Amino acid sequence: MTGHQDLDVLVVGAGFSGVYQLHKLRKAGFSVKLFEAGSGLGGVWYWNCYPGLRVDSDFSIYQFSLEEIWRDWNWTEKYPSRQELIAYFNYVDKKLDLSRDISFNTRVTSASFDTITNRWSVFTETGATANPHFLILCTGFATKPLFPDIPGLNTFQGAMHHTSLWPQAGLDIAGKRIGVIGTGASGVQVIQAAGPVASHLTIFQRTPNLAVPMMNERPLSAATLTKMKEEMYPIVFKRRQQTFGGFQFDRIPRGVFDMSPEERYLLFDDLWFKGGLCFIHGSCNDILTDEKANAEVYAFWRKRVLKRVRDPGMRHKLAPEKQLHPFGAKRISLETSYYEVFNQPNVTLVDLNENPIVEVTPRGLKTQDGIVHELDVLALATGFDAMTGGITRIDIKNTDGITIGDMWKRELSTYLGLTVTGYPNMFTPFGPQGPAAFCNGPTCAEIQGDWIVNCLTYLRRHDYTRIEATQEASAAWVQRVAAIFSKGLLGRAKSFYTGANVPGKRVEPLNFTGGLPLYNTLIQESARGGYTGFRLTSATTAEPGLDFS
Image 1 (cartoon, rainbow, N blue to C red):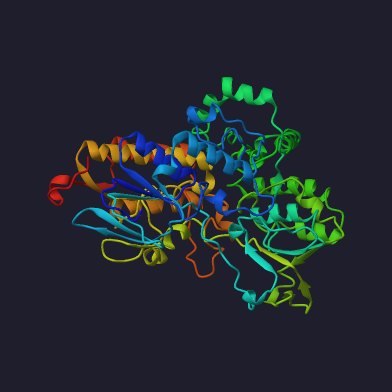
Image 2 (image 1 turned 90 degrees about the vertical axis):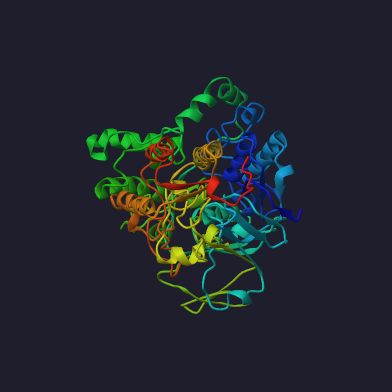
C-alpha cells in the first residue's frame, strides 16, 4: 500500500499498546491503520530476541484482559519466554484479524500537522504515506538502542550485536568466547544463557545488578490454567488496575520499622521465595521513600546473594558492603541462575570503575591494565534512550515547525503523559511522563488505550476535529510529575528513569511515579470534565467539506 489519505487514525507500533489501539478503534467504528517497522507483531518482543530473553511479569497479568483472547490461550510458563510471547501475538493476530490493517516493514520517518485540514502528513522509509486526523505513537519506552562510545567499536571482527538488535535468525554462541558489556536486565539474561555454553565468558560491569529471584514455574499445571480461566482471570484483571504498579499484588500499608525485626525478616523471606517483582513492589510502602528502610532491604538482599557466590573478589563486586544506590532506584531485574554463573572457572568479571575499557580492537576489548580480552561474540547490553527516544527518532514537527526532539531537549513536557502541547491530535501512550516504566505493560496499554478511544469517540460525537493540550495544563503536569518524583529515592541513581544513562541528555523525571490508581484518577477527571486541560476545535472552524464521521 502506498497511501492512506482519509484515515481517522494512524497507529505507529505493533506492541501491546498499538495492537490494543488498533482493535479497540476498529470496534468503535474508526477507520484505522497501523504502521510497524518490523515484519511481525510484538513490539519489544519482536525486536529483542537475544538468548535467554523472557518477561519479568507473570503470565496472569502480562496479557490482554479480553476474554475472546484468554479463553482459548494456554500459557506454558509462569514467566513466558520470548518465543512464547511471539506465539501469543501471532495467536492474537489471527483471533482479531489484525494484519489486514497493518503495514509491516514500514518505519515512520517523519510527520507534520496541517493546521488547515487538521490532518497529519506521515512519511515512511518505504514511501508509504498517510494523512490521518489522529496520530497515535505506540513506539514503546525502550526502543531506541544506546551504543557505548568506545574508540574502535566498529573495528571488532567478531559478531557484535546490541541486545535489542540481535539477529532474528539467532546466533550460535556455544563454545565461543563471549563478552557482555552491561549488567542491566538484558545483560543478566544473556549472561545466564551464555554462562553454561561459552568457552569463556567475560562480563564488563559498571554497576552491580541488584537482581532478585524469578522463581519461574514450568510447565504450568493444567489445574492452574483451569482455575485461572474458571475463576481468577476476571478478578486478576480488575485487581491489576487497582494497584500501584498494575500488578496483582501491591505495597502493604506498613513501614519497614512498623514491624519487629522478626516480622520484617519473615516478610522479606516470604516475598523472596514467592519470587518476582513482589519483593520490592509487594513489600512495605516506605522502601522507595525512606533511606533506612531501603537499607534494610539491601542488607537482606546482600545476605542472600553472598550465600550463592563463592569467590571473595566476586562477592565484593556483585554485592558490595557499601550500598551504591537505593534498592529499586534502578529497574529491578529477575534472575534464575545469574549469581551461580560467577562461580564458573570460565567466567571473568571486569569492574569498569577500576579497570575501564580503553578501546575495542579487531580481536576484542582492551582494558586500562593493558589486557586485550579476546572475543568471538560481543553482546552490547547497554540499554536505551528510554521513554523519549522512540518518539524523538521520528522527525515530528509541531505547528511552528519545531521537531519534538528539539523541543524536549529544552524541557520534557507532556500533558497526562499522553499528549504534547503544539502537537495537536497526537497521542503518546506508554510514553514519557506517564506510568510506563512503573507499570505492568498490558495494564498500562489498556488503561491509556481505553482513554484515547473514549476521547476520540467524544470528539466525534461532538463534532470536534482537533484536540490540543494547553500550555498551562502541560506546565502543571510537569510540576506534578517532578513533585511526586522528588519525594522518593528514585533520583539517587544514574538510571534511565531520569535519562542519566544517556550522555548529554537532560536529567529529569521521565515517568509518573505516583502509582496507577492516582494516574487513572487524574486522566479520568480530565475526561469527565469534557477533557479539561485541552483546547477543542469544532469542525465548523475547519476546512469546508471535512468528514470526520
